Image 1: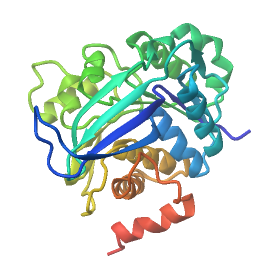
Image 2: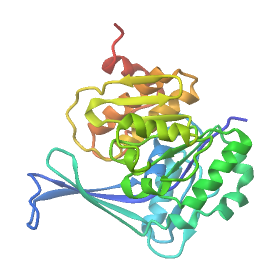
Image 3: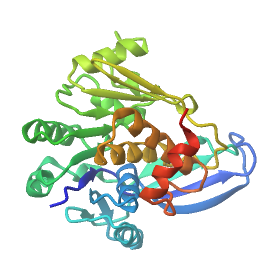
Length: 309
């Protein structure tokens, strides 16, 4: 049996307003608008499926037309929804305001209903979870569900990855035991949100998370690249120089590339190269995924951004 990656968390409709000139506060700005399937865990599941990795998505969909559309997008990409939840009411929506340079100016999250992904729901789907090669969850889920997954991972030995998403959900991870967590993937804003006030500098924050039981911390530094910290080593990799079209989904794509590398048995540095390559490709298109890139294409593209010396 081929073991799937199981992705747990948000599935959303992404409605993105891209300003044609700089956004002016408290005034009207001209913009174009796009509607795409989104949500951190859904994005990662979608792109993994397109790259040929078997994947299950545990998320929440509304019983409206948006929910039907989101489900169909997932199924068309090859994402399985065996433990997905359908709720009464509207599907979740992410509304993003992008500045003229593609950077995020502001965003709003509505009707996500991730609280419905409960420990009881996961317990009812234990057999499915036990089949996983990796478990990945975004921090939009409840802290009780995070704790259940941590305990489940420790019990089964299945590696568990947490994507903090943004500062507010990252704060939920502050002060709790993260014993056995395989990987957490904060950026420079999310890392301090997960740590105590005593940990002021980056190295102190990394050391605190290691002491709290995290096996690896993958710190994203935007255009400066990323660093992967563990108890015995640190690996850094610069980001490629590109022209950004849309920043939506770049972080999700980065984690997707890393998980693909692990799934293929690659070492940490080559996983980082795959991660940065996929993120770079996503940054150069509108939307959170790149449907035209298959696994073989992505593996070849690594040499475009990181040519062998």
